Image (spheres, rainbow, N blue to C red):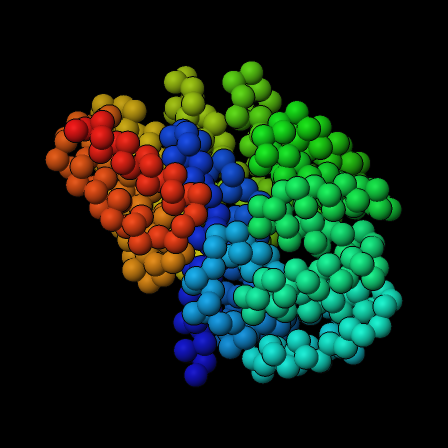
Length: 451
């Protein structure tokens, strides 16, 4: 039974990791050189979940806190049918609940929830929460109920309870929770509304910085670049000040926000120098923390190296540096994947695709480019065979990558069309989504260009 649960949990981690990879593939289709730029915060969360749940691969040490959410709680059949945005909420909620339910001195009602989740009885956990009152504790119970409905893949019910929490007790925390919920569903107008309320309600510098960083992510996603820059820079300033007083608590937040700022700056040719500075400072911080706690921070080192490589690959005079960044990121991700393949193999494929695009620019490295791209394709093909709903778009994008290789770099009409038509076939089986539709348009455009 234990072995079966472990397999289910690894499957879930495969699902969760899909979000970050899918977003980076979407970025690639928009701009062949930009793959990986948007995966920063998501990859960090996936790494955090993986570190916690990978503990099930080993005998339980005496001093290790085990995840509160056990495999039996999750309906993996439903999870494989979720949209990318919903998968993002699912993984964040799992990470937060595991952290919160393992705190000391839990309120009695949270302890009851923890006990039910340990037995895999999520419905009973939901039913145990009495939300009849109209006070702060009732609002907290509504939040917890919403999170449990997310774990149960019931998103309309989750939204209802987030709204109830805000109506009963419109605090910073309740507004922040619903703002994040709407942001992850790409319901941007509603998310903006609640983040702006969070700014007004923020009582500490930490709360303000966190809100500004989240607001910056939202503004960047809606192409409000000037506003996003202002949000990120103020958040960095606040986190720097907090880190000067408590570096161990706040330097990772500085690095996280610098990564987000670097992603924004890298979009504009007149701020590439600033993007480089943001990434390199974030990398320095993550390297320092990884030297003390590699299991937690090495994924962030690899993520930042990958982002830095994307930036460096845009300039012919820094292709050597881009190659070094990608190869180091790939080495770290391969090592992580050797211990936890479900969580990190998609990240390996992500970096291999980036490296392949870089190598394809040089006639003397087309062989290496082919090897990188085909290895990435093999990983995505295997993942898609295990979990079609989560990985078909990534698989199709990797096929398109090879089709472009045989169109632009080593012209071969037959091979290019072979990969393009397979990508078209895979995408025809995907759920309707902006990403899948955009991929399909690009594939059909490529086929038309050959014809």
